[in-house]
Image (cartoon, rainbow, N blue to C red; front, side, top):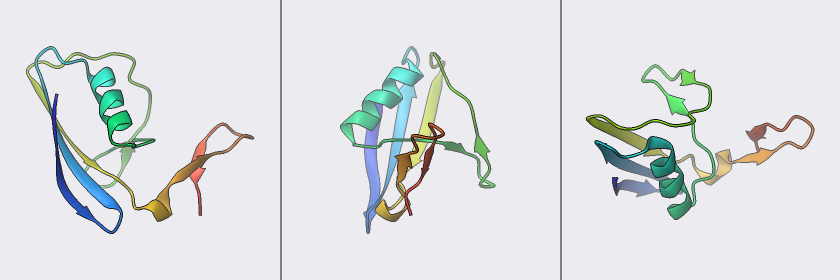
Length: 90
């Protein structure tokens, strides 16, 4: 996997990731997240709606390109012990 920081402004970073044939998606994304201190992620379509669920394993063929935009610090989430959900920490 190749990754590059595209933009950074006021606590918001945008990266582009390029995965190639044979790259394992889950492991690549976890590694990227750890290296860049990103704690949670959601897959969001152009219209702003989010896809839910858990990806257990996936192998790229032929390519996968991902844009990652980190929320500014004001929109970070915290773990809610009552529900187990990651809720906005306002």
